[in-house]
Image (cartoon, rainbow over all chains, first blue to last red; front, side, top):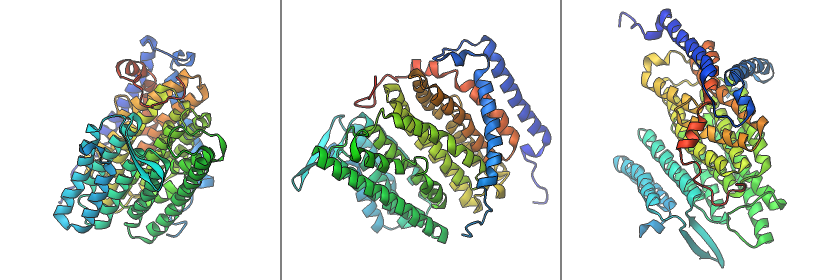
Length: 82
Length: 434
C-alpha cells in the first residue's frame, strides 16, 4: 500500500459537516419546544426549553466537576505497577 | 412433560459434556444449551412450582412466575449471545465456566427458596471468577482473587441472613423480605454487594476490566442482574433503595469520564444503569418495577453489545486504553457502528431500547412525586452518553453537542410509549404500592 486510503473523517470538511448537522439538530429540537405540546407529569417539564437547558447545564457541570476531580482521583497509568 | 426439568439442569449437563468433548462437538453442545433451555422456558406453564423434600425441609428449586420468567428469558438470551461470541476461543475452561455461570444465574432467578438461591449464588461466584482468571495474567489472577473474596462475603451474609430468617419465621421461601430485623438487613447487604451499591461497588470496576474479552460479556450480564432480581423479589417498595439507586446513577459518571481503560468505563456505567433498576424497585409501583425489569432486560442486551465491541477491540489491537486507541472506524467500521448503537441505547437515545425502559422508571419517579430523584436520573442519562461517546472519540465537541440534543428529546416521548405499550401489565406478583 503505497498510498494511504483516504477515510471519510480524514477530511476536515466532513468533520465540520457532521458537527453542523448536530448543531442544527440541537437548534431544531430547541425550536420545537415553541410548538410542541408535551404531556407533562410535573410543571417543570412544561417550562420552555427545560430539557435542553437542563441537559446542557448538567453536562457542562459534569465535565467541569470531573476536571477538578481528576486532581484528587487520577493516578498515573502504572500506579499499581501491575 | 420435559417442562418440569429446571433449565439450570440443561446448562449444567451441557457444561459437564463440554468439559469432556473435543473441538467441534463442544461447539454444538455450547450453542444448543441456551436454545434448549430457552425453548423449555417458553413452554413452561406460569405458576409452576417444583418442590423437593430434602432432609425434612421442603425446597423449591424451580418456581415460575412472571418476574422469574422474564429474568430467565433474558439470561438465556444473554447466554446464547455470549456463547456465540466466545465460540472462536480455544479455551475449554472458559466455555465450561461460562455454561456453569449462565446456568447458575438462570437457576438463581428461578429458585423458589433461599437455600437453592444461595447455592446458585455461590456457583455463580466461583464460575465467574474462572472467567477472570482465564485471562492468565498476574493482574487478572490478583483481581479474580479479590473479586472472589467479596463475592463470598456476599454469600456469607446471605447464608447468615437466611439462617436467622429461618429461625425467626420458620420459612425458607424467597418472597417479600423487607428491612425488618437483622435478617432483612443481612440479606439486603448480601444483595447490595452484588448489586454494586455505592462503596460496595469496587469489586466490579476492579475485576471486570481484567476478565477475558469474552468473559466480560458474561460477567456484565449475570451477577448484577441476578442481584436486581433478588432486590425486586425481596425488597420492592423499600424507600432506601430509591436514594441508593439515585446515588448509583450519579456518582459513577464522574469516574467514567476520568477513566482511561474502556472496559472500566463500561463497568462504571453498569453501576449507573443498575441505579435505574434499583431506583425503580425502590419506588415499587407497577410502572416502576416494570421499568426496572425492562431496563434489566434491555441493559443485558446493549451492555453485552458494548462489552463485545470492546472485547473485539482488545482482541484485534491488544489495547484497551482510550489514549492508545483512535481512528478505529477506519480499521473496524462494523464494530464502530455497533458500538455507536450500543452507546445510543445506553444513553437512552430516542427509539433505542434504553430510552423506553429508562423513561418508565423516570416517569414513575415523577408520578410518585420524587422530584429530586427524577432530576438526578435525568442528569445521569445524558451524562452516560457523554462517557460513552467521549471515551471513544476523544473529541470534546461530540459530547457537548449530543447531550443537550438527547436530553432535549428524552423527556418528550415517554407519553406516547406509555400509551401504546402494555406497561400496565403487572410483572411483579405483589407490587408494594399500587
